[in-house]
Image 1: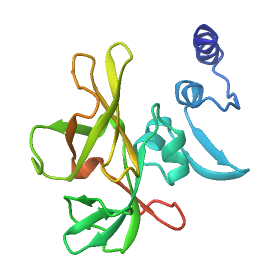
Image 2: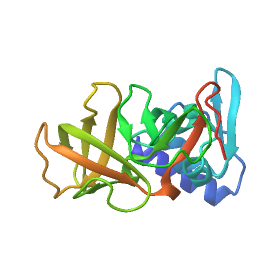
Image 3: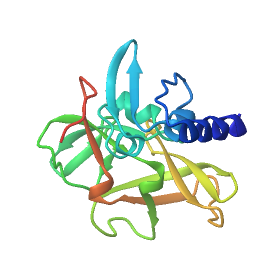
Length: 189
């Protein structure tokens, strides 16, 4: 399949023709497209260059579909200290969108494991490791919050060592956080 994808891309370049390619495989879409159209139930969710769609998804649907692994989507609400997960778990971070409830999106590669809570700017989360999945050049930390609600996936170096139930302090820099309307799922800028 990877070879066929490479052959199709080479053929497009050699012939210099416009091609409409329909696929449910987001990796194929990202690698073959100059311009990507993301459909959901027959409706256009977003049109753009693959990297633009990846960097600035227009909705939670696009955020969860484009990217492997998918973006973490967490329901949050404003509280007296800034933010809390919808389940009540407190977060350290400002309510920068001035709303009572919304969804924040953070790609697994934009989460950083830090040594202490509150280290650096951005949103801070505390979770515990469920599973460390080595996949070669990197590993994935499948983690959960103390309340048992949302799970969060973190991409780390393949050399990172974490044990099940180990407490993690995570940070997402302000520029890596995506904001979505809790009701419509549309991006908030």
